Length: 354
Ligand SMILES: [Zn+2]
Image 1 (cartoon, rainbow, N blue to C red):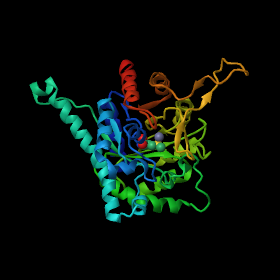
Image 2: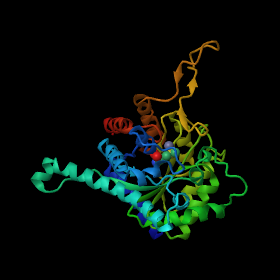
Image 3: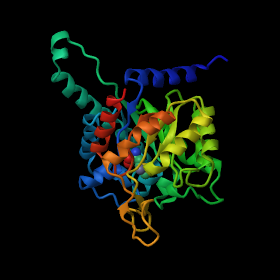
Image 4: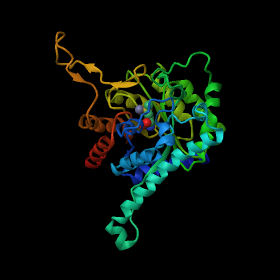
């Protein structure tokens, strides 16, 4: 079978990139929760996208922290940035679109600063005038319709019968068109909660003749299906049939669920698998808070009290990496409540077992 042009160049971008990274790439960690850790108040329907208005310098700084920690891919602050959301704040459509572009520009600026810093300090550069720079891609993040609703439905995937494939395509179309022309290397469709939204993205990529690659990343709360209950196999197959999709995976899901999901995804596709779990805590949409879930150790008796929080610390988190790698994943990072330290730890595991 002959590959179409789009498929050919997209696939090449990802395979070349992975090769340059040594076979495995490091994705950044949680952006919104890291902005919060630095004091940003994200209690707003725009969530992290609020910082595009109030503190773009902080967004750039967090991107830079992730680059310093070893990330090969950084994701823009556009997860919850939507034209509809900005307009609801009183902005014009033009202003909204320019903020969307700005999210990618800020990430690109961070990459420039990072490269500048690293070349200036490098002897190789001083001696020969060129060094092989660590490959860094900027991905434009696209959050789900549920993220825009800001009611936690990106973790339930239940949009109700009134929301059809067309509703979702209409909702996402213009934002995608703007992000495509923003200078991003890749579109990261993140936290996809159901099959319908995956279909909407796949059709949009096709209809808009999109020529930059994308990844589809789903979320799960049981390690078997995506959060809506749709089958991960079916979701991954939609991604597999879409020629612009260069990686399929899971994000914002507790680490303990990842291994089984990677095995399932591998059955549906041979595309690279991207994994960036959250810290293992759960988001309480009502309280708008992350809470540690108590779990009982397999060794404790029915009478003992739960003894440990299931939020994982960085060392635990990375102890999973080799298992996920054996199961077939090749891009690793973190989602909500992971930090530059998590990313540094991931990088060091990967470099110890090349
Ligand atoms: Zn997350």
